[in-house]
Image 1 (cartoon, helix red, strand yellow):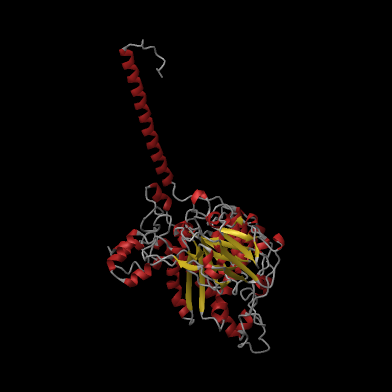
Image 2: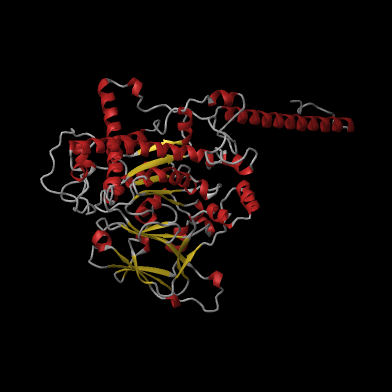
Length: 588
Protein backbone atom coordinates (compact mmCIF):
# COMPACT_ATOMS: atom_id res chain seq x y z
CA UNK A 1 0.00 0.00 0.00
CA UNK A 2 1.38 3.43 -0.98
CA UNK A 3 -0.78 5.60 1.28
CA UNK A 4 2.31 6.72 3.24
CA UNK A 5 4.02 8.30 0.21
CA UNK A 6 4.81 12.04 0.51
CA UNK A 7 2.93 13.84 -2.27
CA UNK A 8 4.21 17.28 -1.26
CA UNK A 9 0.75 18.67 -0.61
CA UNK A 10 0.39 20.34 -4.06
CA UNK A 11 -2.50 19.96 -6.54
CA UNK A 12 -0.63 17.21 -8.38
CA UNK A 13 -0.16 15.39 -5.10
CA UNK A 14 -3.86 15.69 -4.34
CA UNK A 15 -4.68 14.26 -7.76
CA UNK A 16 -2.31 11.37 -7.21
CA UNK A 17 -3.86 10.72 -3.80
CA UNK A 18 -7.34 10.73 -5.40
CA UNK A 19 -6.15 8.30 -8.06
CA UNK A 20 -4.73 6.00 -5.38
CA UNK A 21 -8.00 6.10 -3.44
CA UNK A 22 -9.95 5.25 -6.62
CA UNK A 23 -7.53 2.47 -7.44
CA UNK A 24 -8.00 1.10 -3.94
CA UNK A 25 -11.80 1.26 -4.29
CA UNK A 26 -11.63 -0.51 -7.63
CA UNK A 27 -9.33 -3.10 -6.15
CA UNK A 28 -11.82 -3.68 -3.30
CA UNK A 29 -14.70 -3.90 -5.79
CA UNK A 30 -12.80 -6.46 -7.83
CA UNK A 31 -12.01 -8.42 -4.67
CA UNK A 32 -15.67 -8.29 -3.65
CA UNK A 33 -16.73 -9.52 -7.09
CA UNK A 34 -14.14 -12.26 -6.87
CA UNK A 35 -15.43 -13.29 -3.43
CA UNK A 36 -19.01 -13.30 -4.70
CA UNK A 37 -18.01 -15.46 -7.64
CA UNK A 38 -16.09 -17.75 -5.32
CA UNK A 39 -19.11 -17.98 -3.05
CA UNK A 40 -21.29 -18.84 -6.04
CA UNK A 41 -18.80 -21.47 -7.13
CA UNK A 42 -18.69 -22.84 -3.59
CA UNK A 43 -22.47 -22.97 -3.48
CA UNK A 44 -22.48 -24.80 -6.78
CA UNK A 45 -19.89 -27.19 -5.43
CA UNK A 46 -21.99 -27.72 -2.34
CA UNK A 47 -25.04 -28.39 -4.47
CA UNK A 48 -23.06 -30.90 -6.47
CA UNK A 49 -22.41 -32.88 -3.32
CA UNK A 50 -26.04 -34.03 -3.41
CA UNK A 51 -27.35 -36.22 -0.61
CA UNK A 52 -24.93 -36.73 2.24
CA UNK A 53 -23.71 -40.06 3.51
CA UNK A 54 -24.08 -40.83 7.21
CA UNK A 55 -21.64 -42.67 9.43
CA UNK A 56 -23.49 -45.71 10.75
CA UNK A 57 -23.62 -45.99 14.52
CA UNK A 58 -24.01 -49.76 14.20
CA UNK A 59 -22.93 -51.36 10.93
CA UNK A 60 -24.21 -54.94 10.47
CA UNK A 61 -21.19 -55.74 8.26
CA UNK A 62 -18.90 -54.95 11.20
CA UNK A 63 -20.88 -56.76 13.93
CA UNK A 64 -19.75 -59.77 15.90
CA UNK A 65 -21.83 -62.95 15.73
CA UNK A 66 -23.60 -62.09 19.00
CA UNK A 67 -24.29 -58.52 17.91
CA UNK A 68 -25.66 -59.74 14.59
CA UNK A 69 -27.97 -62.18 16.36
CA UNK A 70 -29.35 -59.31 18.47
CA UNK A 71 -29.76 -57.20 15.33
CA UNK A 72 -31.78 -59.94 13.62
CA UNK A 73 -33.79 -60.48 16.81
CA UNK A 74 -34.97 -56.87 16.68
CA UNK A 75 -35.95 -57.31 13.04
CA UNK A 76 -37.97 -60.41 13.95
CA UNK A 77 -39.67 -58.48 16.74
CA UNK A 78 -40.80 -55.79 14.31
CA UNK A 79 -42.01 -58.43 11.87
CA UNK A 80 -43.93 -60.22 14.61
CA UNK A 81 -45.72 -57.03 15.62
CA UNK A 82 -46.50 -56.25 11.98
CA UNK A 83 -47.91 -59.73 11.24
CA UNK A 84 -49.93 -59.79 14.46
CA UNK A 85 -51.42 -56.37 13.71
CA UNK A 86 -52.47 -57.38 10.21
CA UNK A 87 -53.88 -60.75 11.27
CA UNK A 88 -56.00 -59.36 14.08
CA UNK A 89 -57.37 -56.60 11.88
CA UNK A 90 -58.84 -59.06 9.35
CA UNK A 91 -59.84 -61.76 11.87
CA UNK A 92 -61.68 -59.59 14.37
CA UNK A 93 -65.40 -60.06 13.61
CA UNK A 94 -66.22 -56.62 15.03
CA UNK A 95 -63.62 -54.75 12.98
CA UNK A 96 -64.51 -53.59 9.48
CA UNK A 97 -61.75 -51.05 8.85
CA UNK A 98 -57.97 -50.91 8.95
CA UNK A 99 -56.99 -47.43 10.12
CA UNK A 100 -53.70 -45.55 9.79
CA UNK A 101 -53.60 -42.18 11.55
CA UNK A 102 -50.99 -39.55 10.71
CA UNK A 103 -49.83 -36.68 12.89
CA UNK A 104 -47.25 -34.30 11.52
CA UNK A 105 -46.33 -30.98 9.98
CA UNK A 106 -46.93 -29.46 6.54
CA UNK A 107 -45.12 -32.44 4.97
CA UNK A 108 -47.77 -34.76 6.39
CA UNK A 109 -50.50 -32.28 5.42
CA UNK A 110 -49.23 -32.40 1.82
CA UNK A 111 -48.69 -28.67 1.45
CA UNK A 112 -47.59 -27.21 -1.91
CA UNK A 113 -49.57 -30.04 -3.53
CA UNK A 114 -53.22 -30.91 -3.87
CA UNK A 115 -54.46 -32.85 -0.85
CA UNK A 116 -55.38 -35.58 -3.36
CA UNK A 117 -51.64 -36.05 -4.01
CA UNK A 118 -50.52 -36.29 -0.36
CA UNK A 119 -48.93 -39.60 0.57
CA UNK A 120 -51.87 -40.42 2.85
CA UNK A 121 -54.39 -40.04 0.01
CA UNK A 122 -52.22 -42.13 -2.30
CA UNK A 123 -51.75 -44.80 0.38
CA UNK A 124 -55.48 -45.05 1.03
CA UNK A 125 -56.19 -45.50 -2.68
CA UNK A 126 -53.47 -48.18 -2.92
CA UNK A 127 -54.62 -50.20 0.11
CA UNK A 128 -58.38 -49.89 -0.43
CA UNK A 129 -58.80 -52.74 -2.98
CA UNK A 130 -56.62 -55.02 -0.83
CA UNK A 131 -58.80 -54.63 2.25
CA UNK A 132 -61.98 -54.59 0.17
CA UNK A 133 -61.21 -58.25 -0.58
CA UNK A 134 -61.66 -58.85 3.16
CA UNK A 135 -64.89 -56.79 3.23
CA UNK A 136 -63.02 -54.03 5.03
CA UNK A 137 -62.20 -50.38 4.45
CA UNK A 138 -58.66 -49.00 4.42
CA UNK A 139 -58.67 -45.53 5.96
CA UNK A 140 -55.65 -43.25 6.19
CA UNK A 141 -56.38 -40.21 8.36
CA UNK A 142 -54.32 -37.10 7.63
CA UNK A 143 -54.10 -34.91 10.75
CA UNK A 144 -51.02 -33.07 9.46
CA UNK A 145 -50.95 -29.42 10.55
CA UNK A 146 -48.97 -26.62 8.92
CA UNK A 147 -46.69 -24.41 10.99
CA UNK A 148 -49.00 -21.38 10.86
CA UNK A 149 -50.87 -22.43 13.99
CA UNK A 150 -47.64 -22.62 16.01
CA UNK A 151 -47.79 -26.38 16.54
CA UNK A 152 -44.79 -28.68 16.62
CA UNK A 153 -44.18 -32.33 17.41
CA UNK A 154 -43.66 -31.28 21.03
CA UNK A 155 -47.30 -30.44 21.70
CA UNK A 156 -49.09 -32.52 19.06
CA UNK A 157 -47.95 -35.91 20.42
CA UNK A 158 -49.98 -35.12 23.54
CA UNK A 159 -53.12 -35.06 21.37
CA UNK A 160 -52.70 -38.29 19.44
CA UNK A 161 -56.01 -39.76 20.72
CA UNK A 162 -57.99 -36.74 19.52
CA UNK A 163 -56.06 -35.95 16.35
CA UNK A 164 -56.50 -39.52 15.07
CA UNK A 165 -59.00 -42.24 15.97
CA UNK A 166 -58.27 -43.94 19.29
CA UNK A 167 -58.71 -47.33 17.57
CA UNK A 168 -56.03 -46.84 14.89
CA UNK A 169 -53.99 -49.89 13.85
CA UNK A 170 -50.92 -47.82 12.91
CA UNK A 171 -49.78 -44.31 13.85
CA UNK A 172 -47.64 -42.31 11.44
CA UNK A 173 -45.44 -39.46 12.66
CA UNK A 174 -43.70 -36.91 10.40
CA UNK A 175 -42.06 -33.69 11.63
CA UNK A 176 -38.84 -33.63 9.58
CA UNK A 177 -38.15 -29.89 9.53
CA UNK A 178 -39.20 -29.24 13.14
CA UNK A 179 -37.05 -31.86 14.79
CA UNK A 180 -33.86 -30.57 16.34
CA UNK A 181 -31.90 -32.00 19.24
CA UNK A 182 -34.15 -33.91 21.62
CA UNK A 183 -36.88 -35.03 19.17
CA UNK A 184 -36.41 -38.63 20.29
CA UNK A 185 -38.19 -37.62 23.50
CA UNK A 186 -41.42 -36.92 21.62
CA UNK A 187 -41.11 -40.06 19.51
CA UNK A 188 -40.61 -42.15 22.63
CA UNK A 189 -43.62 -40.52 24.27
CA UNK A 190 -45.72 -41.33 21.23
CA UNK A 191 -44.56 -44.96 21.04
CA UNK A 192 -45.28 -45.54 24.71
CA UNK A 193 -48.65 -43.76 24.71
CA UNK A 194 -49.66 -45.65 21.54
CA UNK A 195 -49.26 -48.90 23.47
CA UNK A 196 -51.95 -47.63 25.87
CA UNK A 197 -54.43 -47.17 23.02
CA UNK A 198 -57.07 -49.73 22.14
CA UNK A 199 -55.21 -51.66 19.46
CA UNK A 200 -51.64 -50.95 20.56
CA UNK A 201 -50.75 -49.45 17.18
CA UNK A 202 -47.29 -49.54 15.69
CA UNK A 203 -45.63 -46.12 15.28
CA UNK A 204 -44.00 -45.54 11.90
CA UNK A 205 -41.88 -42.45 11.30
CA UNK A 206 -41.75 -40.75 7.87
CA UNK A 207 -38.67 -38.62 7.14
CA UNK A 208 -38.99 -36.28 4.17
CA UNK A 209 -35.28 -36.42 3.34
CA UNK A 210 -32.68 -38.92 4.66
CA UNK A 211 -29.04 -39.87 4.00
CA UNK A 212 -27.96 -41.86 0.95
CA UNK A 213 -26.94 -44.91 2.99
CA UNK A 214 -29.10 -44.84 6.10
CA UNK A 215 -32.43 -43.68 7.46
CA UNK A 216 -31.32 -42.01 10.72
CA UNK A 217 -28.93 -44.87 11.50
CA UNK A 218 -26.16 -42.29 11.93
CA UNK A 219 -27.68 -40.95 15.14
CA UNK A 220 -27.15 -42.83 18.41
CA UNK A 221 -30.43 -41.72 19.96
CA UNK A 222 -32.38 -42.91 16.91
CA UNK A 223 -30.62 -46.27 16.91
CA UNK A 224 -31.28 -46.77 20.64
CA UNK A 225 -34.93 -45.88 20.17
CA UNK A 226 -35.21 -48.28 17.25
CA UNK A 227 -33.80 -51.19 19.26
CA UNK A 228 -35.66 -50.45 22.49
CA UNK A 229 -39.08 -50.36 20.81
CA UNK A 230 -38.66 -52.94 18.04
CA UNK A 231 -41.08 -55.26 19.84
CA UNK A 232 -43.81 -52.62 19.45
CA UNK A 233 -43.16 -52.33 15.72
CA UNK A 234 -41.40 -48.93 15.73
CA UNK A 235 -39.82 -48.23 12.34
CA UNK A 236 -38.84 -45.34 10.07
CA UNK A 237 -38.72 -44.62 6.34
CA UNK A 238 -36.69 -41.88 4.63
CA UNK A 239 -37.73 -40.89 1.10
CA UNK A 240 -34.25 -40.08 -0.26
CA UNK A 241 -32.70 -43.14 1.38
CA UNK A 242 -35.34 -45.36 -0.18
CA UNK A 243 -34.67 -43.92 -3.63
CA UNK A 244 -30.91 -44.42 -3.22
CA UNK A 245 -31.45 -48.02 -2.12
CA UNK A 246 -33.32 -48.63 -5.39
CA UNK A 247 -29.94 -48.60 -7.13
CA UNK A 248 -30.18 -45.49 -9.30
CA UNK A 249 -26.85 -43.68 -9.64
CA UNK A 250 -27.80 -40.25 -8.28
CA UNK A 251 -24.20 -39.35 -7.45
CA UNK A 252 -23.08 -39.49 -11.09
CA UNK A 253 -26.04 -37.35 -12.07
CA UNK A 254 -25.15 -34.78 -9.43
CA UNK A 255 -21.61 -34.62 -10.81
CA UNK A 256 -23.15 -33.96 -14.22
CA UNK A 257 -25.24 -31.14 -12.77
CA UNK A 258 -28.52 -33.06 -12.41
CA UNK A 259 -30.03 -32.94 -8.93
CA UNK A 260 -33.26 -34.92 -8.82
CA UNK A 261 -33.76 -33.89 -5.19
CA UNK A 262 -33.68 -30.21 -6.05
CA UNK A 263 -36.75 -28.02 -6.13
CA UNK A 264 -39.35 -28.73 -8.85
CA UNK A 265 -37.33 -31.48 -10.56
CA UNK A 266 -39.46 -33.99 -12.47
CA UNK A 267 -38.62 -37.68 -12.45
CA UNK A 268 -36.95 -39.69 -9.68
CA UNK A 269 -34.71 -41.79 -11.95
CA UNK A 270 -37.19 -44.65 -12.05
CA UNK A 271 -40.40 -42.93 -13.17
CA UNK A 272 -41.24 -39.59 -14.72
CA UNK A 273 -44.67 -39.27 -13.11
CA UNK A 274 -46.95 -41.09 -10.69
CA UNK A 275 -48.91 -44.19 -11.71
CA UNK A 276 -52.10 -42.19 -11.96
CA UNK A 277 -50.18 -39.50 -13.85
CA UNK A 278 -49.28 -42.13 -16.46
CA UNK A 279 -52.99 -42.41 -17.26
CA UNK A 280 -52.95 -38.82 -18.53
CA UNK A 281 -51.80 -37.99 -22.07
CA UNK A 282 -48.22 -36.95 -22.85
CA UNK A 283 -47.76 -33.18 -22.53
CA UNK A 284 -50.64 -32.83 -20.06
CA UNK A 285 -49.68 -30.19 -17.48
CA UNK A 286 -51.14 -32.24 -14.64
CA UNK A 287 -49.11 -35.28 -15.73
CA UNK A 288 -45.91 -33.22 -15.62
CA UNK A 289 -46.80 -31.73 -12.23
CA UNK A 290 -47.39 -35.20 -10.79
CA UNK A 291 -43.81 -36.12 -11.72
CA UNK A 292 -42.31 -33.63 -9.26
CA UNK A 293 -40.11 -35.29 -6.63
CA UNK A 294 -39.75 -32.23 -4.36
CA UNK A 295 -41.79 -29.05 -4.77
CA UNK A 296 -39.31 -27.30 -2.46
CA UNK A 297 -38.60 -28.68 1.00
CA UNK A 298 -41.98 -30.40 0.68
CA UNK A 299 -42.09 -33.59 -1.38
CA UNK A 300 -44.08 -33.51 -4.60
CA UNK A 301 -46.56 -36.16 -5.76
CA UNK A 302 -43.85 -38.50 -7.07
CA UNK A 303 -41.87 -38.16 -3.83
CA UNK A 304 -45.04 -38.91 -1.90
CA UNK A 305 -45.69 -41.95 -4.07
CA UNK A 306 -42.32 -43.34 -2.95
CA UNK A 307 -43.43 -43.00 0.69
CA UNK A 308 -46.90 -44.36 0.01
CA UNK A 309 -45.56 -47.37 -1.86
CA UNK A 310 -43.00 -48.14 0.84
CA UNK A 311 -45.67 -48.26 3.54
CA UNK A 312 -48.08 -50.19 1.31
CA UNK A 313 -45.38 -52.75 0.52
CA UNK A 314 -44.63 -53.31 4.21
CA UNK A 315 -48.28 -53.62 5.22
CA UNK A 316 -49.24 -55.93 2.35
CA UNK A 317 -46.16 -58.07 3.00
CA UNK A 318 -47.26 -58.40 6.64
CA UNK A 319 -50.77 -59.24 5.49
CA UNK A 320 -49.52 -61.99 3.16
CA UNK A 321 -47.41 -63.47 5.97
CA UNK A 322 -50.45 -63.40 8.25
CA UNK A 323 -52.62 -65.11 5.60
CA UNK A 324 -50.04 -67.90 5.22
CA UNK A 325 -50.22 -68.61 8.96
CA UNK A 326 -54.04 -68.35 8.99
CA UNK A 327 -54.32 -70.77 6.07
CA UNK A 328 -51.98 -73.22 7.78
CA UNK A 329 -54.05 -73.00 10.97
CA UNK A 330 -57.33 -73.52 9.13
CA UNK A 331 -55.96 -76.61 7.43
CA UNK A 332 -54.81 -77.91 10.82
CA UNK A 333 -58.21 -77.23 12.44
CA UNK A 334 -56.83 -74.63 14.84
CA UNK A 335 -59.32 -72.14 16.34
CA UNK A 336 -58.22 -68.85 14.84
CA UNK A 337 -59.53 -66.62 17.64
CA UNK A 338 -57.66 -68.68 20.22
CA UNK A 339 -54.61 -68.44 18.01
CA UNK A 340 -54.64 -64.65 17.73
CA UNK A 341 -56.60 -63.50 20.77
CA UNK A 342 -56.31 -64.28 24.46
CA UNK A 343 -59.17 -66.54 25.59
CA UNK A 344 -60.72 -64.05 28.04
CA UNK A 345 -61.25 -61.57 25.20
CA UNK A 346 -58.05 -59.57 25.51
CA UNK A 347 -55.80 -59.02 22.54
CA UNK A 348 -52.47 -60.75 22.65
CA UNK A 349 -50.06 -58.01 23.69
CA UNK A 350 -46.49 -57.32 22.69
CA UNK A 351 -45.16 -58.50 26.03
CA UNK A 352 -46.99 -61.81 25.56
CA UNK A 353 -45.62 -62.07 22.03
CA UNK A 354 -42.14 -61.59 23.40
CA UNK A 355 -42.70 -64.51 25.79
CA UNK A 356 -43.19 -66.84 22.86
CA UNK A 357 -46.99 -66.74 22.51
CA UNK A 358 -46.93 -64.90 19.21
CA UNK A 359 -48.69 -66.69 16.34
CA UNK A 360 -45.69 -65.86 14.18
CA UNK A 361 -43.31 -67.56 16.60
CA UNK A 362 -45.25 -70.49 18.08
CA UNK A 363 -45.25 -73.98 16.62
CA UNK A 364 -48.20 -74.81 14.39
CA UNK A 365 -48.90 -77.91 16.48
CA UNK A 366 -51.47 -76.23 18.75
CA UNK A 367 -54.22 -78.15 20.50
CA UNK A 368 -57.78 -77.13 19.56
CA UNK A 369 -59.60 -75.06 22.21
CA UNK A 370 -61.87 -76.84 24.68
CA UNK A 371 -64.86 -74.57 24.00
CA UNK A 372 -66.23 -72.47 21.12
CA UNK A 373 -64.78 -68.99 20.86
CA UNK A 374 -66.82 -67.32 18.14
CA UNK A 375 -68.89 -65.17 20.54
CA UNK A 376 -66.12 -63.91 22.80
CA UNK A 377 -65.78 -60.12 22.99
CA UNK A 378 -62.50 -58.97 21.48
CA UNK A 379 -62.47 -55.28 22.33
CA UNK A 380 -62.13 -55.28 26.09
CA UNK A 381 -59.48 -53.06 27.66
CA UNK A 382 -55.94 -54.35 27.41
CA UNK A 383 -53.97 -55.27 30.50
CA UNK A 384 -51.24 -52.88 31.61
CA UNK A 385 -47.95 -53.38 29.83
CA UNK A 386 -44.74 -53.97 31.68
CA UNK A 387 -42.80 -51.52 29.57
CA UNK A 388 -39.12 -50.86 30.06
CA UNK A 389 -37.92 -47.67 31.70
CA UNK A 390 -37.89 -44.83 29.16
CA UNK A 391 -34.67 -43.78 27.49
CA UNK A 392 -35.42 -40.12 26.89
CA UNK A 393 -38.83 -39.02 28.14
CA UNK A 394 -39.82 -38.19 31.71
CA UNK A 395 -41.28 -41.38 33.28
CA UNK A 396 -43.77 -39.22 35.20
CA UNK A 397 -45.39 -38.40 31.85
CA UNK A 398 -44.58 -41.32 29.56
CA UNK A 399 -44.99 -44.28 31.93
CA UNK A 400 -48.65 -43.59 32.62
CA UNK A 401 -51.36 -46.29 32.27
CA UNK A 402 -53.33 -44.05 29.90
CA UNK A 403 -52.32 -41.81 27.00
CA UNK A 404 -52.89 -38.07 27.47
CA UNK A 405 -56.43 -36.74 27.14
CA UNK A 406 -56.79 -33.82 24.78
CA UNK A 407 -59.29 -31.35 23.44
CA UNK A 408 -57.99 -29.86 20.17
CA UNK A 409 -59.94 -27.06 18.48
CA UNK A 410 -57.79 -27.13 15.33
CA UNK A 411 -58.78 -29.03 12.22
CA UNK A 412 -58.78 -31.81 11.33
CA UNK A 413 -59.39 -34.20 14.19
CA UNK A 414 -60.56 -37.78 13.74
CA UNK A 415 -60.79 -38.94 17.34
CA UNK A 416 -62.92 -38.14 20.35
CA UNK A 417 -62.13 -35.25 22.72
CA UNK A 418 -60.80 -36.57 25.99
CA UNK A 419 -61.80 -33.41 27.86
CA UNK A 420 -65.38 -32.15 28.09
CA UNK A 421 -66.57 -28.55 28.06
CA UNK A 422 -68.90 -28.29 31.04
CA UNK A 423 -69.76 -24.64 30.44
CA UNK A 424 -68.90 -22.66 27.31
CA UNK A 425 -70.71 -19.51 28.47
CA UNK A 426 -70.16 -16.72 25.94
CA UNK A 427 -66.78 -17.96 24.72
CA UNK A 428 -66.80 -18.43 20.95
CA UNK A 429 -65.37 -21.30 18.94
CA UNK A 430 -63.60 -20.30 15.73
CA UNK A 431 -62.01 -22.17 12.85
CA UNK A 432 -59.86 -20.53 10.22
CA UNK A 433 -61.72 -20.29 6.91
CA UNK A 434 -59.38 -21.31 4.12
CA UNK A 435 -59.96 -21.20 0.40
CA UNK A 436 -59.46 -24.34 -1.64
CA UNK A 437 -56.11 -23.11 -2.95
CA UNK A 438 -54.58 -22.37 0.48
CA UNK A 439 -51.14 -24.04 0.58
CA UNK A 440 -51.62 -25.57 -2.88
CA UNK A 441 -48.67 -25.00 -5.23
CA UNK A 442 -48.97 -22.35 -7.94
CA UNK A 443 -48.67 -24.89 -10.74
CA UNK A 444 -51.54 -27.01 -9.41
CA UNK A 445 -53.67 -23.95 -8.68
CA UNK A 446 -53.38 -22.91 -12.32
CA UNK A 447 -54.14 -26.44 -13.54
CA UNK A 448 -57.18 -26.89 -11.31
CA UNK A 449 -58.53 -23.41 -12.07
CA UNK A 450 -58.41 -24.22 -15.77
CA UNK A 451 -60.56 -27.31 -15.14
CA UNK A 452 -63.49 -25.22 -13.84
CA UNK A 453 -64.43 -28.28 -11.78
CA UNK A 454 -65.68 -27.77 -8.18
CA UNK A 455 -65.09 -31.46 -7.48
CA UNK A 456 -61.38 -31.08 -8.20
CA UNK A 457 -61.26 -27.98 -6.03
CA UNK A 458 -62.61 -30.09 -3.17
CA UNK A 459 -60.04 -32.81 -3.90
CA UNK A 460 -57.28 -30.20 -3.77
CA UNK A 461 -58.42 -28.55 -0.52
CA UNK A 462 -56.19 -29.18 2.48
CA UNK A 463 -57.81 -30.31 5.70
CA UNK A 464 -55.73 -28.38 8.23
CA UNK A 465 -56.89 -25.10 9.74
CA UNK A 466 -56.13 -23.15 12.91
CA UNK A 467 -58.87 -22.93 15.49
CA UNK A 468 -59.69 -22.30 19.11
CA UNK A 469 -62.15 -20.94 21.63
CA UNK A 470 -61.81 -17.27 22.58
CA UNK A 471 -62.99 -14.44 24.79
CA UNK A 472 -61.88 -10.86 25.47
CA UNK A 473 -63.76 -9.66 28.57
CA UNK A 474 -65.81 -10.74 31.59
CA UNK A 475 -69.15 -10.35 29.83
CA UNK A 476 -68.44 -13.65 28.07
CA UNK A 477 -68.60 -15.56 31.35
CA UNK A 478 -66.59 -18.49 32.73
CA UNK A 479 -65.28 -21.24 30.48
CA UNK A 480 -65.20 -24.57 32.36
CA UNK A 481 -63.39 -27.73 31.24
CA UNK A 482 -64.05 -31.01 33.04
CA UNK A 483 -60.79 -32.90 33.22
CA UNK A 484 -60.92 -36.75 33.18
CA UNK A 485 -59.85 -37.31 36.78
CA UNK A 486 -60.11 -41.11 36.59
CA UNK A 487 -57.50 -41.21 33.81
CA UNK A 488 -55.13 -38.66 35.34
CA UNK A 489 -52.16 -40.15 37.19
CA UNK A 490 -49.35 -37.65 36.54
CA UNK A 491 -51.30 -34.47 37.23
CA UNK A 492 -50.15 -32.60 34.13
CA UNK A 493 -52.54 -29.88 32.95
CA UNK A 494 -51.60 -27.92 29.84
CA UNK A 495 -53.15 -25.10 27.82
CA UNK A 496 -52.09 -24.10 24.29
CA UNK A 497 -52.98 -20.86 22.53
CA UNK A 498 -53.44 -19.57 18.99
CA UNK A 499 -51.93 -17.98 16.84
CA UNK A 500 -49.33 -15.90 15.01
CA UNK A 501 -46.50 -13.54 15.94
CA UNK A 502 -46.74 -11.60 19.20
CA UNK A 503 -45.40 -8.12 20.10
CA UNK A 504 -42.07 -7.65 21.83
CA UNK A 505 -40.69 -10.98 20.73
CA UNK A 506 -42.89 -12.82 23.22
CA UNK A 507 -44.13 -16.33 22.57
CA UNK A 508 -47.85 -16.91 22.10
CA UNK A 509 -48.01 -18.56 25.52
CA UNK A 510 -46.34 -15.58 27.22
CA UNK A 511 -48.23 -12.80 25.45
CA UNK A 512 -51.67 -14.37 25.48
CA UNK A 513 -51.59 -15.98 28.92
CA UNK A 514 -48.60 -15.78 31.25
CA UNK A 515 -48.18 -11.99 30.96
CA UNK A 516 -51.84 -11.27 30.34
CA UNK A 517 -53.23 -9.97 33.63
CA UNK A 518 -56.75 -10.01 32.21
CA UNK A 519 -57.14 -13.78 32.37
CA UNK A 520 -57.19 -16.02 35.43
CA UNK A 521 -57.25 -19.80 35.61
CA UNK A 522 -58.48 -21.88 38.53
CA UNK A 523 -58.64 -25.56 39.38
CA UNK A 524 -61.61 -26.58 41.51
CA UNK A 525 -62.16 -22.89 42.35
CA UNK A 526 -58.58 -22.36 43.54
CA UNK A 527 -56.81 -19.70 41.49
CA UNK A 528 -53.54 -21.03 40.09
CA UNK A 529 -50.37 -18.96 40.49
CA UNK A 530 -48.94 -18.06 37.08
CA UNK A 531 -45.47 -17.57 38.56
CA UNK A 532 -45.26 -21.35 39.10
CA UNK A 533 -46.17 -22.09 35.49
CA UNK A 534 -43.80 -22.42 32.54
CA UNK A 535 -43.85 -22.42 28.75
CA UNK A 536 -44.07 -26.14 27.88
CA UNK A 537 -43.56 -28.14 25.72
CA UNK A 538 -43.26 -25.47 23.01
CA UNK A 539 -43.81 -21.73 22.62
CA UNK A 540 -47.60 -21.88 22.26
CA UNK A 541 -48.33 -23.90 25.41
CA UNK A 542 -48.24 -23.39 29.17
CA UNK A 543 -47.87 -26.07 31.82
CA UNK A 544 -50.59 -24.87 34.18
CA UNK A 545 -49.95 -27.75 36.61
CA UNK A 546 -46.82 -29.88 36.43
CA UNK A 547 -47.94 -32.76 38.64
CA UNK A 548 -50.16 -33.75 41.51
CA UNK A 549 -48.76 -32.57 44.82
CA UNK A 550 -47.46 -29.32 43.36
CA UNK A 551 -48.73 -26.40 45.42
CA UNK A 552 -50.80 -28.86 47.46
CA UNK A 553 -52.98 -29.68 44.45
CA UNK A 554 -53.97 -33.31 44.77
CA UNK A 555 -56.14 -35.48 42.58
CA UNK A 556 -59.85 -35.16 43.28
CA UNK A 557 -62.85 -37.05 41.95
CA UNK A 558 -63.93 -33.97 40.03
CA UNK A 559 -61.38 -31.71 38.34
CA UNK A 560 -62.80 -28.47 36.92
CA UNK A 561 -60.48 -26.09 35.08
CA UNK A 562 -61.92 -22.57 34.74
CA UNK A 563 -60.86 -19.60 32.62
CA UNK A 564 -62.20 -16.10 33.29
CA UNK A 565 -61.52 -12.71 31.70
CA UNK A 566 -61.34 -9.43 33.59
CA UNK A 567 -63.69 -6.46 33.06
CA UNK A 568 -62.79 -4.28 30.10
CA UNK A 569 -63.69 -0.71 29.17
CA UNK A 570 -66.83 -1.10 27.04
CA UNK A 571 -65.61 1.75 24.81
CA UNK A 572 -62.29 -0.01 24.09
CA UNK A 573 -61.83 -0.94 20.42
CA UNK A 574 -62.28 -4.64 19.70
CA UNK A 575 -58.74 -5.08 18.34
CA UNK A 576 -57.28 -3.46 21.48
CA UNK A 577 -58.93 -5.91 23.87
CA UNK A 578 -56.65 -8.61 25.35
CA UNK A 579 -58.01 -11.69 23.58
CA UNK A 580 -57.34 -15.20 24.81
CA UNK A 581 -57.62 -17.97 22.23
CA UNK A 582 -57.26 -21.53 23.54
CA UNK A 583 -56.40 -24.13 20.89
CA UNK A 584 -55.64 -27.21 23.04
CA UNK A 585 -56.35 -28.48 26.54
CA UNK A 586 -54.34 -31.49 27.77
CA UNK A 587 -54.62 -33.58 30.93
CA UNK A 588 -52.41 -36.53 31.83
